[in-house]
Image (cartoon, rainbow, N blue to C red; front, side):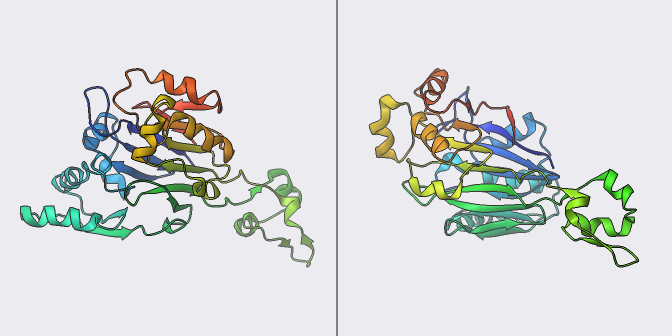
Length: 302
């Protein structure tokens, strides 16, 4: 299953001519998930040729404007484009009221149904299907704020073509074998599953950790993730400012990645005070080498 993350915005607070506010598209197989929706997100969706009507689930981390001010505009565009499919919107308490009151006071009736799902606590399963499970992550910010972990479910076992031929395994039995069952032939002889299959690839996971101070409680939820996005609003020279505003530095993000044994780290949500983002890499890579910037338009394979 394909599994990738498209960065559409990685700036904090104010949008600028050089940076967009936080937003990402997470593609898992045939599903597209929108993670946060800062101002201008729908422009970024068009720029990167994302089919907005294929987005059925939107996740909002918290109710600071740079993470959701683009949502109402995107919903209006979906309506104008004739959307009929229902849309699921996941986020903290208050999001439903904010969105509905704007459409109600504008006298607008959308062409599709919005289904709101409130994120309440860390570890909560906020979405699940036969291939994917999404859980809420604990973050430490000035207002309620959640990260989200997108994880593949355990995959079927891999069939061994040579073994299937050797033991003359019929087609009708093969699906059950991928699920771990042994095979019993017409004479009652049992062929153990381990002779017919091999272990599947390990399920992959992506953790999105939005606005947060360094928070040890987060670590138990994201151990050994394949790809970690962690905000890094400030450099170490502004560590005091980071603490005051419940944000992280590049070194904080690198510390988390190292402590959870992540395979790869992306940092973003950069303060506009920094003209060069390379300094974030210079600081963070002192501790965690496999670290990249959340550059807008870049796709990261999980």
